[in-house]
Length: 271
Image 1 (spheres, one colour):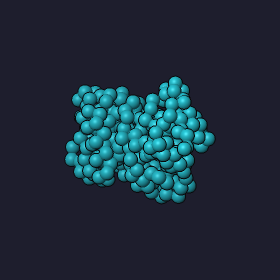
Image 2: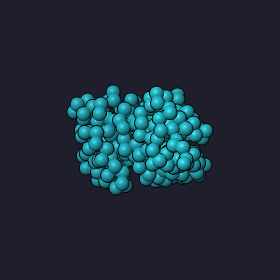
Image 3: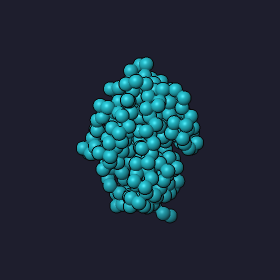
Image 4: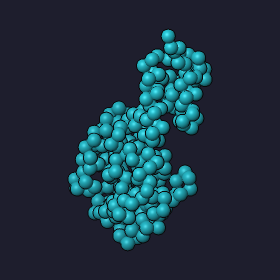
């Protein structure tokens, strides 16, 4: 008879292919235990079903699949969001956009989130501000997931299917977006796990700026006087995006660095 695997056995195998923090998260989730149990009860036997799940998940992660797709969830701004393949995985650097947006919100603000995906940005702002927030996405699977996350978290957000501004007829105090901004020929699209994520949510056209260009040019029509536009962009696009804001008539243009010190978010006041 094959000896049952223990928590310690599973963690040991995971650490051979993953970093220690990731091995801990994957192992705890796959085995259905708290992370503290990995060290408090290392010799506890695990069921055959849990062992098989752990082996499957580990193989998928070593093959490059994002951990968020494997676990089916991702934490963002303290929110535990449901995530599935076909929807962009929220990144820590996007929290910079939330930090940039919060000073410009108040209880009567109307906020628009363009390309909401899982709803990460809209729901983080809803958690912090309790304002009137509309979240849009061109893909129904994103709209459905955003709605599911909103209901699960008990957050009030209006969620609509739209190609950028196509379904919008009102004006807003603040427009935020984390649009596709990777250039079509960027080699990163073919590695680093990005091959598992939706191309439409990553690729911003030939130069990576197609979506940003459309948003910046269209936003003044949907911003109230003095309204703010805040956009996340690529690590090397700060000057180009600031130039787009300026040429469109935005003022008070400001670039904000992410947690790594890279300029990541551009904001401006509507003309």
